[in-house]
Amino acid sequence: MKLETLPDYLRPGLAIVSIGLNPSLPSVRAGFYFANPRNRFWRALDGSGLVPESLVPGVAAMARLFEEYAIGFTDVVKRPTAGGRDLRAADFREGAPVLRAKLEDSGPRIAWFHGKQAYSSYLRYTGGPRGPVGWGEQDIRIGVSRVFVTPNPSPANAVFSMQDLVGHYRRLKDWCDRLATQDADC
Image 1 (cartoon, rainbow, N blue to C red):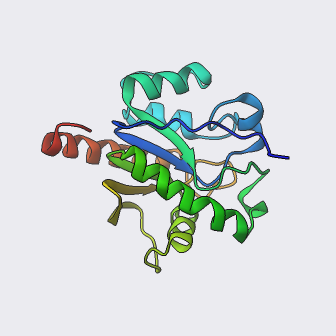
Image 2: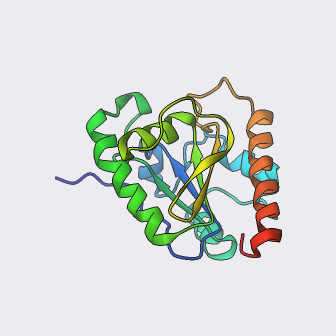
């Protein structure tokens, strides 16, 4: 029996693809990414200026981000769990190569990983370089996609304040703006 999960918001021509570790159970029940009311993604997005409007979390906001702002969504692992600790190596072994193929096919300008765990797990199970992962811009690309890593906005990652998250999201916006002046398509 296949578990219900969140749909991918992927297509060619995206500026950014937001990549979570895996869908949360509240998100799957609600039908949209970052649906847990304690998740700080939507508030950090609002405070960052990454999009020029405040969005009410929901399916309509997901569609607006996808259609109007060319921001897509997916996960390293598509199996929903109560938390990242419930994932197994087999989940990453299956999910990471699938994610790589999705990113290579859709070719977003930026692959935005939420959390070092998401990115390092992706690298580990796709044969990427190993070693410490830093915040922000990364040295490697996935196909044509540049990579950016921010802290995971999950309520389980309370070590980062809202101000910290907003700062990281603003760095992503600034980088995207710089790329737009260079490439005219971010």
